[in-house]
Structure formats: C-alpha cells, structure tokens
Length: 214
Image 1 (cartoon, one colour):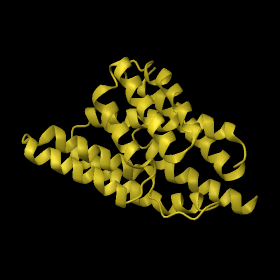
Image 2 (cartoon, helix red, strand yellow; image 1 turned 90 degrees about the horizontal axis):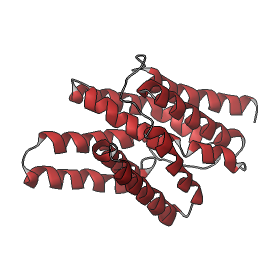
Image 3 (spheres, helix red, strand yellow; image 1 turned 90 degrees about the vertical axis):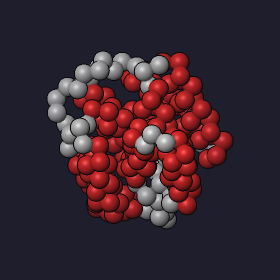
C-alpha cells in the first residue's frame, strides 16, 4: 500500500468522523471509523518529513496551513460545543519541531530541555489530540518500522487517552495499525497539496451544510 493510498484512507476516515460529528452526533459508528484517521496521518506526516529536502520550509508550510485552517476548524467544532482548541495541524507542527531539534542539535544538554519545553507548551496551548497526539507522531516517526514497538506505542496512546478523557472510542484507533503495516514504502502519485487543501475545505463545507440543512 503506497503513501498515496494510505493518505486517501485517512482522508476518508477523517471525513466520515467529521460528518458524524456535525450531522449525527449521537451515532458512535461515525466516530469509531474516524478513530483510524489520526494514527495514519501521524505516520504519514513522519514519512513526508523524512523524505523532504528542506525540513525548515516543510515545518513553516505546515504552520501556514495550520493557521489558515483554524477558522474553518473553529466554525465546525463550535457547532455543538464551545471550544478554543487549535486544530491538529498545530500538533503536527509541534511534533515535527521536536523531531527536527532532536535530529539536528547534537548537544543533549540543549535538545532534551528544548524538546521538554515544546511538549510542556502543549499543556498550556490546547491543540487537538494534545500532548499524546504529539508524542504519538514523534514515536511513530522513529519506531513505526518495528511492528511490535509500534503496537506498544499506539496501545499506550489509546490507553492513556481513555484514562484522561474517559472515552472508549479511542481504543478503536488500534485498527489503524493494519493499514500502517501494509505500507510498502512507495510514494504513489504526487499529492503534496491534497491534505493541506482538503483539511480546511471540508470543514468549511460541513459548516455551511449544517447551517443550510441543520
């Protein structure tokens, strides 16, 4: 399964999740399917970062789309509850920044405290999936190639998410490993802008659709 196919699956899962959130909040099936999206995206973000030549530009581009996606994210998520949370792209920005520091700063006396500071910031700056999502992205970047370790990482993520948020739905994200393990290392068609454009666009469309057909 190529990176392109994985990305398409993740987009479909995310869209189903958000359709359920907006139009069918009482139907858990939509949210269960949606739990598969984040780990696949977290894995894909790492794959893309490993193969990009200009990592600084990559992070800045992701930050730009995180900022552009924030208003659509607020419009959609505030349909049912009031929230000031930042969208998931900010979580990926934090994760890639931690990875960048770890890979490019040689001194442990600098990179370890810096990584800790970046992680601690997420406790004060609320982002979607929070510090657990950031750490999951970082750990998958380094260990996704090992099936056993990847399972332990994702199992730990789901368990901690359940303990913190008291939501059993997140346990279903373990199924996403079946898709991640089928990754064949190939890129597939070039879809550099697909997720960046689809992410804010679909949230804006769902918000407008809800206002037109509540």
